[in-house]
Length: 71
Image (cartoon, rainbow, N blue to C red; front, top):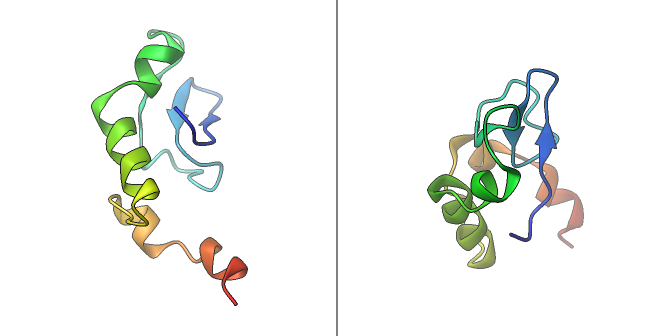
């Protein structure tokens, strides 16, 4: 898997450090292996969407972080 993830204090794995509310819950590091979490269906869909320049999750669709890099 090739995207940055965050792990919250309760063990929730999220695909982005900007998801501070755990809106995109990929799994929990305390009960699942990280490879299984990052290889899960939701994580794979996000990854492939980003590779095709598409945001699949509502949080990603609202995110303005990418606009900082557009010229």
